[in-house]
Amino acid sequence: MTALTLQQKELLERHYDGELSEFEAKKAEKLIASSATAREFVESLEEIGTATRAAEEQAWSTANAPEASSVAATAIDSDLTTASLDELAPLLERFFDGETDDLESEFVASLIDSRDDVADYLTTLDNLRGGILGSAEAMPEVDFGGFWDAVSEKIDEATTSFDSDEHRVLLYRFHDGEVTDEEVAQVNGWVDANVPEVVSTLDALREVKLATTCGIETAQEGVDFSSIWAAVEDAMDEDLEAQGDNIVAFGKAKRENETKKQPILQRYQQSIYGAVAALFIGGIIIGLFNDQIFEPKVIEKTVVIVDSVEYAPGSSVMINSPVQQASAIQQDGAEPPAEEPTVIWILDTGEENLDGDGSLEEGAESEPADAAAEEAPADVEPDFGNSI
Amino acid sequence: MERDDLELVEAAQEGDREAFRELVEKYQRKVYSICYGMLKNPEDSLDVSQEVFVKVYRYIEKFNKQSSFYTWLYRITVNMCIDYIRKNSKHKSVEYDDRISRDGDDGIAGEHIMPSKLGLNPDKVYGRKELREKMLEALESLSEKHRTILILREVEGLSYEEIADVLNISKGTVMSRLFHARKYFQEAIEEYLDGELKV
Image 1 (cartoon, chains in turn green, red):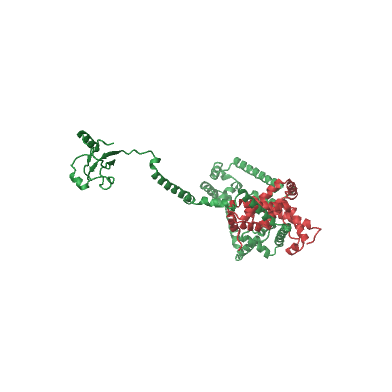
Image 2: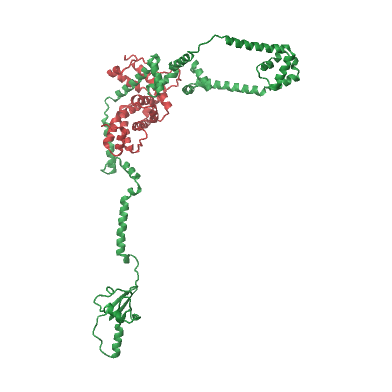
């Protein structure tokens, strides 16, 4: 087990007392972590601390700390007026320093009146104070003009001086470029001052760097680096073959990711167009084959077979039914009339008000609408009694 | 015009094979150096370097550009070397013995990098091949973790923060490990040069 140096012990004591800077604290923690002796030392410090605190607590718990005001009362009770000067001295000194309460001050005042030794004691104290003040006044004039400069110089000296234990890590960090501007200035200050330890340490660090670089470069001599790219290319080709795709798949995932980032409308644009087109075509087909697609719709139509019809828009229609004619001929016993064109009038629901132009089939005999309107008796309803 | 890493990475992510080739050629020596630092064997180092770039090619889509490309690349390199070491027991025993001999609990007192006394300088070192070979031997005598951290710092020029990121250790550990690595390397150089070569 390695013995601790005086510096290390001091460092650990200050660490225990919480008096270290961050840097020093790390140093101390490192020492504790790495050295069993240091750990033992810290443990002993802790034991001492614990014992001291315990003793102090015990002393306080058993001590009778008298209250100031009780002194005078006790003195009066025990007739301290006759006490010796030694016994009274603490009280008198407190009185002289203005630290007594009213009761004590009153008591001391009565003592001064009654006892010469007490008065003399207080006079001595007063003389002593005067002497001290006088000697202070008698001190020669000091020139503090250069005081701050001297202090400042010493501070700078302490800052710029190189402490091998404290500042070595800073040199390592300086070499590695891990320093602040202030630290750079500090190290440059040492270098400018040609501090031997600083210069040699930085040289050593540069040597290590050179040797490392050189060692690695030596290791690289004769290495065929082209084989690295060849291997990567082989891997790329294998991947492409595995995918069975001649398109360069490299970056495919990237494109997919980008696609995912597009707005929904943009992403599904083609699908949306397709769906709209399908709906349009579907609509046309449904329109064309509506009857076949959906259930047949029953439309009631009345078929009236008539010989002729006379009508006018908005008027009643006069119909001559062939059934009626046939019946009349048979009753008369006469020959049936020569064939005459038969009008088949198909009435759709709600088509009662027909235009004169388009309601009848072409070729059907009909009177001009105006003439029919004139001849047709009013209020005659068409006879649909023989409708089919 | 030479493209920077980010441009190359983005182009590679888009499927630009030439961009990826540029990245490989830019970093192959560095990756090899790290591999060599960890594995100490030229053939193994080259094999693992190849695997590193193949892996990078396959995962480059996942590189999120939050860190620099080389930090990400070095992290993959270190992890693959660690995997390789784990799979090859011969490395285990060598590294274990080496660590015992070099990583003792020395405490702090008196543990400093020695002041320069070897008189190394670029002219001398690069002018003599045998000297360079001794440097390499000295480097190889270090433990894997010390070689790695030295290379990351001295050869690759990574910051403490970047090294911490690559090796997945704290910045404090980086500083401590780097300190020990330098110290041991300096001792090793001295050992290897002593009595054999005069600088």
